[in-house]
Length: 437
Image (cartoon, rainbow, N blue to C red; front, side, top):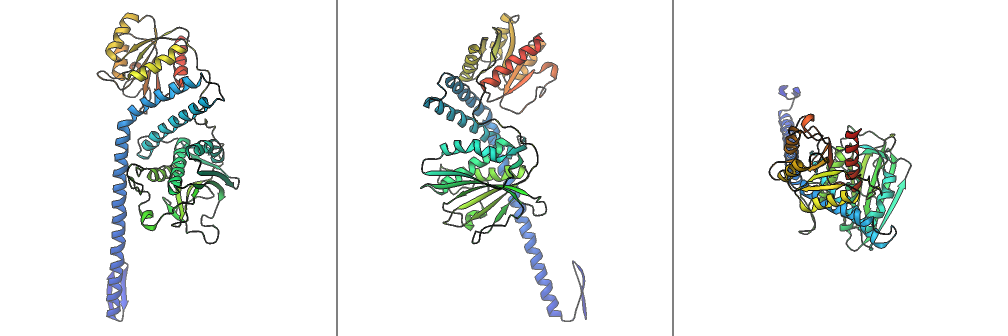
């Protein structure tokens, strides 16, 4: 009898050769497990580094991008207000505003998966969301595609960030379109409550999970599926499907961020992604979330804005904005609703206006990022000079009024970019009325 020790204790065997073989096999299995763990750790590190690169790139362009969208959105609203509601130009302008809404959601969700923006999950009725969202998606597709919405079961409420989930749906529908360039049927299917994820018709491709921890899967689930009859996905492509910057599309037609964004956003909100696919027969992506019993939050339909912005009463607004087109747009909006506007391209011009008109200025509206003295520094200087009027700071960054300075020397309000006409005019009116009350 031979006694040898291994990692699990002592082993007693009679045949030395068998023991040696067993120990070698165990060592090989242990080495393979270690190599697999190292491979996963390396993949996670590279994934994290790519997400960091996305975040740095996005934050670097977000400010300028939001300035552009503020101009597009506000002028689009101004034009729409002059058109007959049911006319073709009004419908076209509504689509332009929808597109601007989704453009800013792209930036917000990119910041979200890079952990530079906190998501705001709320109980959301996915059935109601699809009813609002599907007509816009159909307009984005060409006439070669038939988009159908189906529902199986009665459960449809999950806890998600509404902007983020709309962007996820848009990405998956876009991928479904690209998988079938000749057109065809794309199905948005809502299923719930679901307790058996593997339940499927006979002959269906196997279910593959991404981002799911088998130990922490609370059922029942609500599943939103996006199905196409396109080219399907091969095993080789599937291995890298959710890697940032990986794309199988021709140069210029894909960034490789779409599916990476999908998985990142779904996992952040307590869900995971499933896939059934067969090359040549199409694919079905599933967004799986725990079903919720919460009361759904009321969501604003994309592109909706109040038709009557709050009016001014002849008060004077000092507007400080270095981007000429955005300054002209904000000034146009404020003058249209009844304010007198003093325009300044930077802090130097703002102080000239302040010295001349300090007794008549009812409110200062200033950008954060400007050449020379930025918005925060200008606000502190105005307060130090005795300015007591309310001040609104506009910014494309996530901020609170006390960020970067004390409350006494900071702005009264933050107006996030890109703003709508209603948000701008109501913010100005409420700030002035709050100081007067």
